[in-house]
Length: 141
Image (cartoon, rainbow, N blue to C red; front, side, top):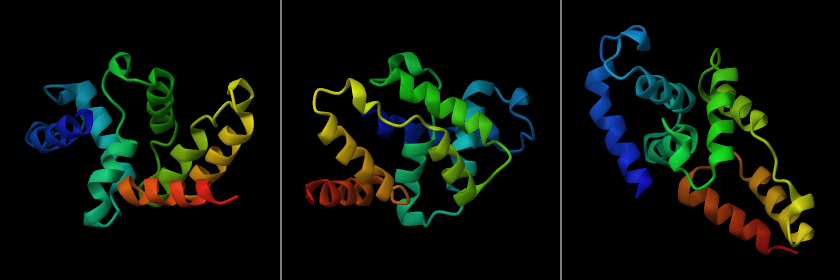
């Protein structure tokens, strides 16, 4: 449900951001900043994958409502750290900034490690393609 709201937010916010050179001049500056971060990260993605890319790389304006607050906050700081880059270079930068899974704390460390390796191998994919890739690689012994 959150993803649907994010897409609607992106579509409805475009007029608010149109012609605004600086997000501080926007009606909703915080929303403008996170939307621009997502757009800068996904600007070179094929239209068929754009929605999934934006969902993966656009941080929420308030991480407090997220299931994984730490990851949401890490995504926001990663987007800030990579703010001079665009497209694939920015996605790579953001992914490198995000913390790896802490498998030492997991109930099944071996399973956690296999999942982390599968996710790393499928890093260039988005949405359903990424989930299917992870599932295939995770299922392999």
